[in-house]
Length: 132
Image (cartoon, rainbow, N blue to C red):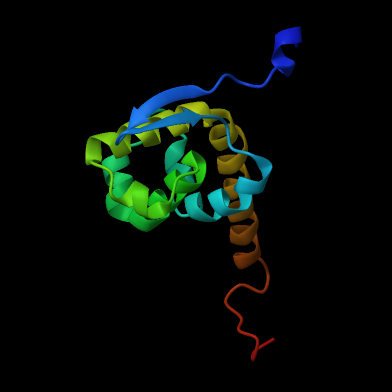
């Protein structure tokens, strides 16, 4: 670890829909809302560059919420963005927060899914509460 690793990251500035945004990594207080929003599609964020159009088609509301939380902008503002601006913003947010998504969120969700799968295929699999 170098001495420079302790410095906070430099915000990435971008102009979207007439608003100057300073994109920085998410903060602790934003994590619960962001995790709730990305849970349905987190596994699709692992493979390099996500297909934002496909994610929007499959998980539109959740993706808009995640973008709003991570950009610290109102959800209505995000929903009103032009498609190109929304994809550019989503890509920048993902790049700035990639370590968080790829190293923390996705493995945590995969681990939880494996635990649930193991419980469902265990000795009581297929039994309902009335048959136990």
